[in-house]
Image (cartoon, rainbow, N blue to C red):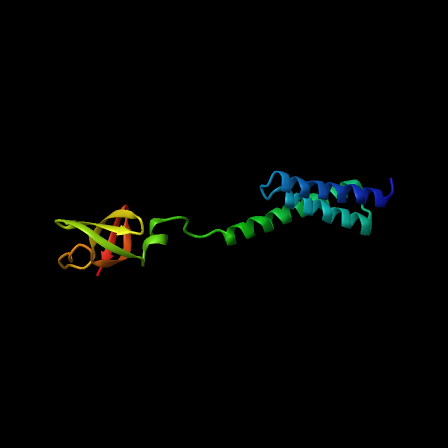
Length: 142
């Protein structure tokens, strides 16, 4: 088998892995496909023995997966879908007051609320600002 044929096998394997990634996405086959393509290019340039080809593929795969994990960590948000991420800073309309507790409407949802300032509740219908979230209770301010 000629070096070009061996390189074509690696390149074809890399392309097959890249196509598999599109059929069954998971962002894993892509990195192995890139490692196989890199090994194919190495075989075209240097024609190492098969054992060295396997070592090169393993090293390139480890490097590619390491890069993938680093990119994944960087792109992942620090806080996912918390109540605070979407509610703090929004306006809330005061619906009812029962003693120290109140009920407010934010968007199309009603929430239990607690007034942050040590003052009396305003009249129902007053617009308040959501300053924080404590479990399922919104902390509101005038």
